[in-house]
Amino acid sequence: MLFVLRKDIVFLLLLVILLPGCNEDASTIAEQPDLSILVLEGKKNDTAYLFVPYTDEGATVNKYFNGTIRCPELVIWANVSGSVNTNMPGTYVLEYNASDSLGVPLAPISRTVQVIENSSNFLSGIYKVACTCTAITGSDKPIITTENYTAVVNPAKGMGHFQLVTLSIGPEHVIPQASLNGSVINVGYFGSNYTHFNALGTLSDTKNAFTIETQIQRYSPATRFLCKNVFTKLLTIKTNTETNKK
Image 1 (cartoon, rainbow, N blue to C red):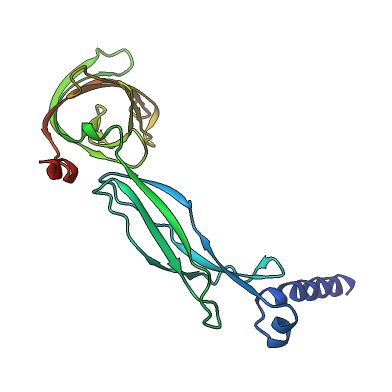
Image 2: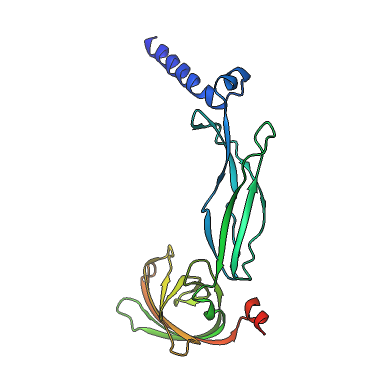
């Protein structure tokens, strides 16, 4: 019986604590008025990259009671004016507006977005790829295979990053995480069928070709694949900026 009473007391205490946070009772609000403000989701000063869609994280109305947010699960999104054109470098401003529960406009807030060119954008294009792979299984004689295929490099979010579609790692073609740092290409990939993945990429002096060498170990059947992919650009993907310069 004592245990039950304690549970009831705990429940009542929680109820007393929570009621001021979400109760819309007029007398409570009159005693301790609410405060509604607009709050940015994400960065106030953000960066976007040429030819990569920009995702606006928006802004929400936060309602506070005695410094504590009231009913955070009831999200009210603000209206936004302005846009970000990632086909053109420059500075863009997004402004957010909303009203409180009484219809009174709240102080507007804004976000500044700088659209810049990615340092790896020059790689964008269509490539022919010559691939040579060696598969090593236990004590069996290594099997060497060759393959020719076509790949595409697209701009991506993040300085130096680019999208590579696709890369042959021997048993399959994958879309890895790729970024350029000087003449070195960093490549990462995770697959549930593999124990580890190592890769090293290098850019040619002419910058119209690059090579990626990979080592990957498959679980079952246990096989190690050593592959060399040589990418040679066939066609450059023209951008709006390049077109406007002509």
